[in-house]
Image 1: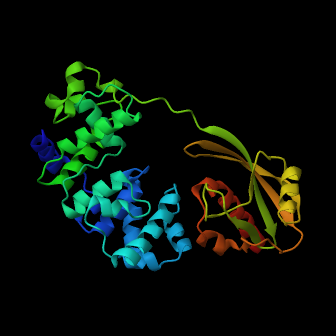
Image 2: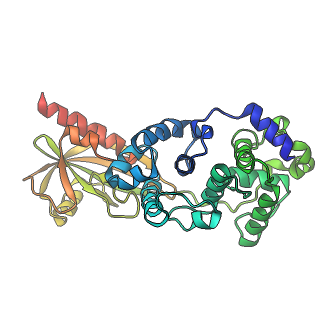
Image 3: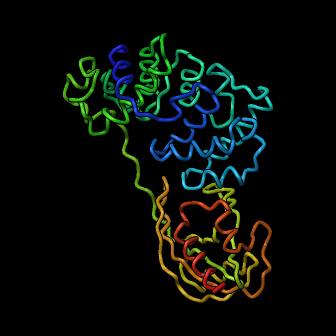
Length: 345
């Protein structure tokens, strides 16, 4: 089975830039970016990121805000912060060299079992599995695991099966072949007719591949009304650095969950130390996170002065473009930029 899969991978694999290197730093950056993000989206980000930070030392020395700005648009910003912290840990604890074993890699912040397995196998040739969601699906079908893969005992059994599949030769290529198979062939709606290893697949034999793996259904994300305040003073707009876990460390327009009326948001702003007058409702926007959906009402305000609390700042049009803002407020940023441009004309 391993030989068949590797032959298919050698023939059919996508030409992705991180597959041209075994540099553990470059491999690690790609694996972090690929979590929750499609490979075609990651391609350009990975290239830009390595141009800006060609070594782990360069990343460790960077300002967090610079890292977040380069990450802008990829989402899941905790990945960028963990990447930065991990680079600093590699430099401080391992003299700028990544550990070559799974245990050493897992001791670093932000590196879990999957990432450690991927880096160890691809960069260092360690015989170990790398099980992400795609690989989990492949293994569950290959081995006919028909119990909930979210339960600890079943998860342990699946990981043991995954480890047993990895060959001593080319473990990194094998893990990438498993990922490739899960991303292109062994999809949630499986394309079994194209699978190079279907003759070895329990689920294919049983005809129930589409029903595997078994997972408890997740609750849908919760809708949260949000008043997003665009507060202007002359040719500048007010931003605050978020301290909440969601989007922590990113600059954002002041937002208030549960408040969508202009006067109510003005009162919340006043309580935060910003005196302003509500002008009008600019529009609405929506952004889906993993566990919640922001249903945003975009509101315009005029500030009485340029005083602002600690952790807040005024930004002109150029600064608004340069600062790291989350994708969630893309519509608000575009509106703010248009309004600021109008003040200059």
